[in-house]
Image 1 (spheres, rainbow, N blue to C red):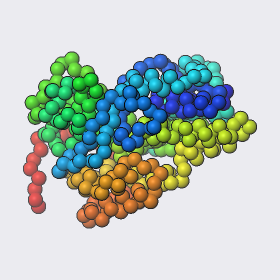
Image 2 (cartoon, rainbow, N blue to C red):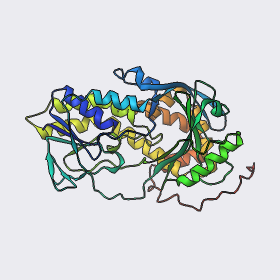
Image 3 (cartoon, one colour):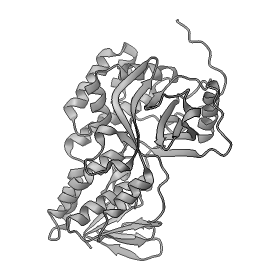
Image 4 (cartoon, rainbow, N blue to C red):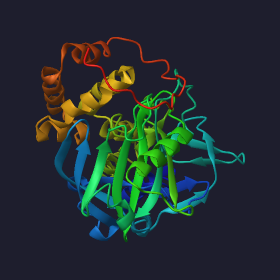
Length: 404
């Protein structure tokens, strides 16, 4: 076959579809290719691919954030109808074959070993299996920095104290949960059909903040608004890595979260994967079947052009600065970020290959920062990554901040 995609998630199906539409003999390998997706997927409205039908969007809402003060982001947030997204992507897979099995490695370029001892071969092998990256067994050099969250599904009336209709609360850093310790924020978005997701989120921590802590904080925060979720209310649990190193699988193209295309500052990757899939498929199709090695190299350049590599490195420096920041300083940092001009905020959060724009945004943030924050931002480029943020979780009530 021409292309074998390992992983039947959104990124894998988007790339498989794009390859098949270009006449490539394409297959997908997954342990459970028919399983339903359960995660909540969202992106900024302006990021929606033009070929994604609006029926895939469950809700559209104006974004706002609270750090110390409140900020209107100026962009709408789109929450996707996940079953509709899955059905849409699967409907585009005409000619794509599915193999049921678990990949355990790639013993040589163009070969995927399965757990049952069999092998599959393709001119181009793609690892799109998300955080598990079965075709890259390189040990991690450090504890992973993870984004974790615990959420509960509320009805619109119950959630009314948190957000107005037509709004999405991107971040609320106020410590309404009443605890000291690692900073977390509230994320509240409409899901469509009268449902609202309220989620306590740890943006990044090495290792991830335990879900039990997030659950406790969420319920304490909701109680301050007079909200007590029903015992049978649906919940969501989130845990994924935001600092994966580049995929090192020999002779393998990494795509989606495996690449990793995850934005270190937000955890978003879906919009990037959907936009990149046609470009990557074009690169493969232009070089197959005569030159598989050249096709792989071209596809890798499509995923990671030099500008995108540089931007990703700057974002990783920003992640390390955040991991080093004293918890009480985090809301102040985001207060400065959300006060940046709209083009700077948009570029940093979405433009993965706009190196000049990213540097301009970071320079603007630097100019608005005090001496201490400037030192943290700059020094993170030269210091070793944080080893761990692990400290004893302290549930004691917050004490008033001193002016001294």
